[in-house]
Image (cartoon, rainbow, N blue to C red; front, side, top):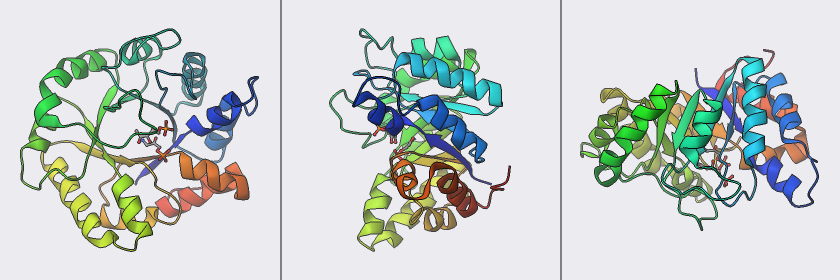
Length: 257
Ligand SMILES: CC(=O)[C@@H](O)[C@H](O)COP(=O)(O)O
Ligand SMILES: NCC(=O)COP(=O)(O)O
């Protein structure tokens, strides 16, 4: 079964727009977990535009108390700065169950590509080892445009990572244009290659209640989806708990957990 990790970055966007602590990131995350979500994801950015270091600590405590997965995303190569100690340092502090490495540049609006494993593999490998020593499962953000049969996935596996997270933005765009079929075949091929190379497969970015079912039917190997932007937006209309339960129904998970 595919599990759902809810990304609560967008709750922090709203909170930071006014200062203070409303809406409360921890309260929202707890509501998602109470509704049956299997874990919580955050992607603190070095510019602290949404999730801050103190949120990471508070969410680590919450997920520990609920005995669910905490998935921390970030660029391990981004230098520390005031308010952001660096991704590895954050992982050392809170020991997330899963560390997802994402090659984002500072100025990016949001994540929009995965690693070039042929180029980045050698410098990822020691970081993967360090994160394993901290007890983290390690996932690497990956494009689905690695040519099937090409060495990219082998380079990803050679880092020692446990999983890749397929960057699903291009699929979501193609879905809107009703041209998702070739894209889905590509994702399915990469997921099979990853499995053959010993890598588990996660997926995320711009997944929503409209496109998720089709994605998972085409790529059933997916172990975990992390979903934030659409889920929090949909929750404005349907409520957070009902929206989480809507996703769990699509995943075939028990919404009554
Ligand atoms: C890694 C990824 O796919 C991103 O979607 C990310 O976690 C979301 O980041 P923002 O909320 O900053 O857009
Ligand atoms: N890893 C993807 C993620 O956490 C959420 O992406 P999005 O649903 O906010 O696009």
